[in-house]
Image (cartoon, rainbow, N blue to C red):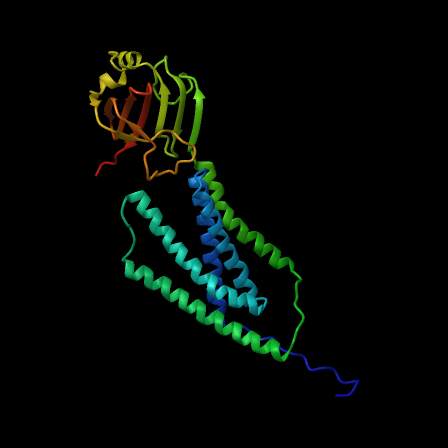
Length: 306
């Protein structure tokens, strides 16, 4: 080659239309996982388990970045990393859906399990194969034609990044706005959203996003509580409340800001006391009194009609 001759221009490998389509699917799957995990993070907050969902959401973000970099910016290392991260992402999406259905319904409410797992397995295999082949193709090209890395970012990429970020944050923002879950402690009897005796002290309560009281507790003498429950104008008397003595250990939840929406274990054991239960429409109300500690515990449970 003479000094006046220019070096031949090297053409970069072009992704196939099938890889482009599947890359878009992978990017959307990453956005969906990141968004769903952040919604779950808000839903369980401040339970420590919420931090695990926050970490898992990063997997979805990594999938978006790696898939775009590997396919559209022709980064061989990103294509290799995406081959594995995409399979991890699909697996966690299905696992999260199964877990949430089980927590909400007490059973697995999904399409036939074999079909669901077949779809995830097929998506994982296709992603591994296509991104793996694309990595091999890029690696072969850059070994023959070393090219300096390009770290420049176009305005179109910035706008696309902002758009994807909006898709991730929008469901979380809606969830935050709609969430009614709340925990309060050391409030007065006139401030709580449920009936309590005027003599109640050290009141604390935990309310779910539907407005029901998951658990509430307050200190009170047994005589004062019984007088209040027995008043002719009380809700308990109006709806035929049933009284029962507690003579053996009975487990019950106390209000706790670290509890998940669906606690898996009880936090307090009553060995001696009383329990009063009444029903209004589809909601069961219960007041349990721990005679040993002088503590009353109030709960509301919604029972759907068939």
